[in-house]
Image 1 (spheres, rainbow, N blue to C red):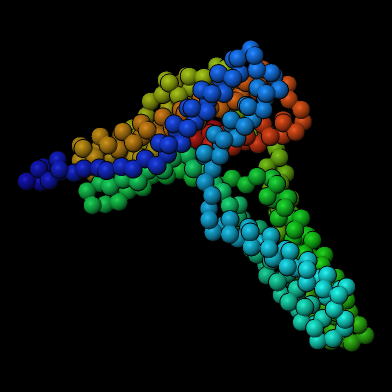
Image 2 (cartoon, rainbow, N blue to C red):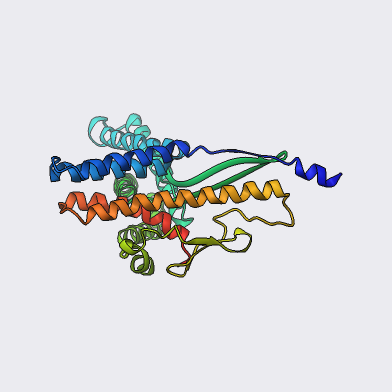
Length: 337
């Protein structure tokens, strides 16, 4: 009876990235058709290369709504602080109105700086997009199952914006505090000293942490990955062809260059705990995850190949750098290297 119940186990799976995979293949097909067309100018080929791979990498990026809302809110608050500072300093005369505006500006500025400090002290990633390599929702019997690989990704422009905006807010805040609290009144001087010391202690580590993040983002990616895989892409075109799963699908072994994937990327298939139908479907999902990485790798190889065929100006090289960084992030997350 128990065996009969086991054989009735079914898995239903939803593959939300199927559309993205189809779009990627179509984009690459159109790109290569244009690049191999002798009638297309070199300039147009370069522009098409950038535009196509920007579209492909955008398919990997998924917006996080509440973080996007927070970013828009930050921009709005930055504008409000600027307006309040102008009103307090140049428009409203001394009196109750100016004090209200000044305190409103200081409160909003303090909240913004507190958020900035929290983000850096606890290494919170507040960028409003993330890389989604794969996402599967399925059901084994009545149990919901979810397989997803999401990677945090923060572009350098976001870090620079965040540091610059908070540096700007700090200047305005210090200016207002000094102008209002520094006087011959001993109590106000004491308040100023306490506030200034607090701000310095909070923000100095935060700014240093942010500068370290900017420096880290600007550095080249892991040397082993570059030497073994990226720089030798011409010998690694079939990287995902000669592969095999280790026991219980714990990780993936790449036979050609003796590399392995990190544990936990693929679904563990434990024969002792899963029925045969469930095992078969989990194995199938692992195969689909492997195909997903293979498709992303083929896109990256296409970019690397076509990049070597043409010369680019500095602005375009910068764009290529960040397109490559998205691909690199995916594969640095994949390989145990």
